[in-house]
Length: 232
Image 1: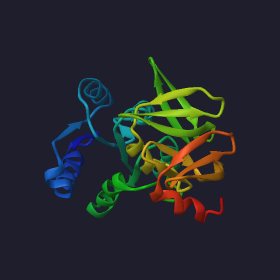
Image 2: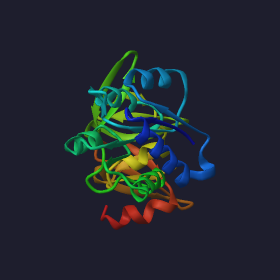
Image 3: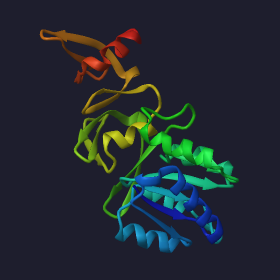
């Protein structure tokens, strides 16, 4: 796992690095520290990472400048900040977790465990997805998305108005950010369970769901019971 720590106080950054190395141990490929916003932006342009650990106050510069750009990229972001009044805003824009200072190894460990979660914790889910289009960042409310479809290392956002948008995170990376009412109904599809209208059963133990919009999506045998349990 490739980690970038963006923290303007070097001793704090080194302490976070030490804790992350204890938590991840052999899972770590590299850990990089950047103490300035400009340095972090330059590094991200040149090097791929898996997780960004970001402070929001960087030498009086607002880390949200970086955050609003990076949440559209393929890695996850964990904010570590004393600026807790911005936690809700950070979650809404798609960070994996928000750790208030003073942090602890237990709290950092819990944040990294969320990488393997099937959905976000209550109250910690996204309301928007930031999508990079050229040099611009477009913010899309998730309520405008009909369903998500895997497109290799990317995800297709199938919008309510029938057009598609490519999102830089994979289906697997997207799951820990979404509210609990979103379900991976098939290896290639995620849908809001509240948007399902009915279930169709086919011979050979195959199933499909019909969305309220009229679209038909496949369902795996593994998740059909969960869908039936919500009373569809």
